[in-house]
Amino acid sequence: MIKVFGHTSPDTDSTGSPIIWAWYLTECRKTPAEAVLQGEPNTEAAWMLDRWSLAKPQIIADVAAGDRCVIVDTNNPAELPASMNEAEVIEIIDHHLLAGGIKTRAPINITIRPLACTATIMHDLIGDDMARAPEGIKGAMLTCILSDTLEFRSPTTTPHDRAVAEKLAVDLGVNVADFASEMFAAKSDVSAFSDAALLRMDSKEYELGGKQLRVSVLETTAPQVLLDRKAALMAAMPGVAAEDAADHVLLFVVDILREEATLLVPNDFVKSVAERSFGVTVTGDTVVLPGVMSRKKQIIPVLAV
Image 1 (tube, one colour):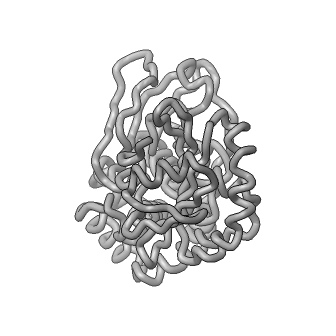
Image 2 (cartoon, rainbow, N blue to C red):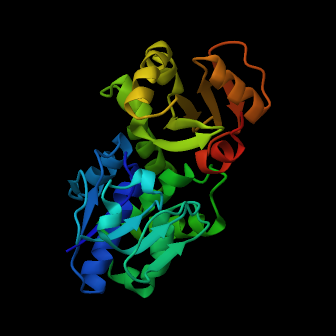
């Protein structure tokens, strides 16, 4: 049985895309596969599973030698199981930059395309077999694309992402605006999560100037709910950093509707990074960054010390 999984701290795309590809391998290629997760899905991803009556995939702690694996929505070893290079990677499907470091036992199919969402790539790879896809698979695909594009607001959005999502919405009889509003409401409900969990909910590891960073993003239509927890979130940062072998945590609260991010500034290092990276002057413990919505395109590429 092939294991299909995405990155740690699974968001909507890293929850939905393994389900989509496991369905395709099993039903269309007649190669048994199962979707698995590296952690609990976030609130929006959990909503997606419920909305489309999809079973939550099993959560795994690691892979074993001999496991046959398909990696989706990442190719970064830092986001993969510790024993990844002992398993047999047979395919990678992703939309992030090529990180390197994954070892394979034979030549494999690798598909990395400059699109906003892994599910968009999968739509293209599945091709004519999309006609066989059940509602749940199409629904997961639509949810993933709307999540990763922030309903087409993100600068990572391509015309093709939008065209695929709009076609899926028509097929499903879904109004995009209404559906996205429900999604974002689910994403914004973080009341059940601890401060440490929020800092890890949607985060990437990144090295900058010899410092190991955890760059976290929380996308929401209710940013004030998170900003009201500002002091507690900043107080939790040193502990999360220490536990995760990082030097600092950068937390960006993305306001989906206003199309801006607020960066929490707990110390002089983060203040310096904010000023050098975004050309702003920081006078308090937060700074608003107009137009910044994408970690992949507008945050990681510009970080400087």
